[in-house]
Amino acid sequence: MINEETKKDVLPRLRKIEGQIKGIHKMIEKERYCI
View (cartoon, one colour):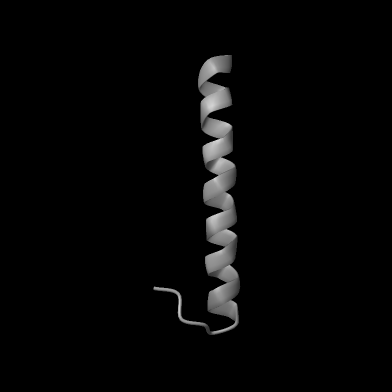
């Protein structure tokens, strides 16, 4: 089980990563330069 302190630290990082991945996904779909 994950403790609350770790959870509070990890969740914002995962949301940021998720947003970045979604942005890359959109760029690939629209065939934009994304390297």
